[in-house]
Image (cartoon, rainbow, N blue to C red):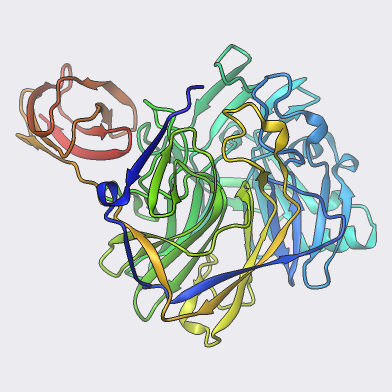
Length: 533
C-alpha cells in the first residue's frame, strides 16, 4: 500500500482558531486497574446495577495483512465477563458450554448490539466458524437476559437458559450498528464478509456492503425470540458504511435519533466518509454541508445534550482517523492511522455543526474498537444521551472507556507491523470538569463546493450542471434511483478551478425521481434530486 501523507496549514483547509469553548467542560481520564482483566476490542456490552457484561471481541491487536494470520480463531474471546468497576473485580464463564449456534456467534468480532431494559440484543458478527470451516458473517439475532446471566456467572451456575437465538438473512451483518427509535430497531450499514481477509483483494473472500437501514420490531416476551414489521431503505452512495460510530442524538426540535459519524469506505476511494448522516423516525438525512475530520473509525463515543442552550455534543476518544494535529498543523494521512485525538462535534439550535479538539489527548495510540460505557446513574434520555442540564455538580463521571486496540506506532498496518499491536486491558474513568475559561482548537468543516442542476424538472433527460471549484481537484459523480441503486457513475475530466458548466444526459431515464451526487476531492459530497419527466 502506497503511503500518502499531506500537510496543510490549518488556515488553508479549515480556518483554524483557538476560541472560547461552547462546551465548558474539560475532560479527565483516570486509569482503573482490574487485575488480570484481559485486553479486548470490538466486543459488545450490556450493564445492570453498575456492573458490565462483556461478550465477544478479540484478544489480539489489529488484524494481520496475511490471510493465513488474519482473525485467527485461537484469539477469539471465548469468555463472557462480568465486570464490577467499583470494586475492581470480575468473573467469567466460557461460551463453550453453550449450544453450537450460540458459542460460535458469541465469540465473534464487530457484532451489532443494543440493550433495552434487561435484554441485550446481538446481531451478526464475523469470526471463524467450526461448523462452516471458514470465516463467516453470522446471520443470528440473539437476546441475552443481562441481570440473570450476570448472577449465574458470578455464582458459577449454568448459563444456557439466559439466551435465545434465531437465524435469518437480514441479520447477516458485521461492522454495522444497532439502535432503537420508538418501538423499532434500526440496523444501520455494515457488510457481509465471507472468508479470509486479504489486503490485495485476492479471492480468499467475498464482501458485499449492505447499504441499508433495516427496521423491525423484536418480540422477546415468550420462549421463542421473533421479529416483525420489517422494512428497509437502501442507498448505495450515502449508506455504504461500516465500522463507524452511531452516536445517539437529541435534535434541535427535541426529537431523539442518531447520527452516523464517518465510517469506511467510499465507493470510489479507499478513504473514510467524512460527512455525517442524521437518522430519525422520518428518514435519514446526509449532512453533506459539514465534514468531520478528527474521528473516522469505530471508537468510544458519547452524546450529551444541553437543553437550555439547545446544543447537542458528541465526544470521540482516540481511534483511527484520516486527519490529526501536529501542533497547529492538520496532517492528512490517507492510511487512516491510529491517533490520540479526543474531539467533539457540536450541533447548535439552528442545526449548524462544528468540530473541536480537546487539549487533552489519549495517553497512547489507542481507542479503536473500544466502547464507552455510559454512567446510567446520571439523568439520560431513552437513547442514553446524557441530560447535561440536569447535572448540578461541577465534576462528574460520565462513564468509562474499556479496551480497544493499543498500538506503539501510528501506522503499524501499512508498515506491516501488526504484531506490535495488542488488545488494550485499560479502563479509563471519564470525568467532565467545569471550566468556563477552557479554550479549544476549532475546525471549519464547511463544504466549500457548490453545484446547481437545471432545468429541474427536465422533460428530455438533458440537464446542465454548474459547479464551482475553489481549487483544482478530482470530480466524480453517481446517478442513483430513489430505491438506492446506482444507475450510472463516472469521472468529470478537465474541470478547472473556478466556475464550471457542463451538459449532462440522463440516458434511458424517464418518469422518475433520480439523485445526482458529485464527489469533490474524495471528501466533499453534494447530492441533488432531479425530476425526469
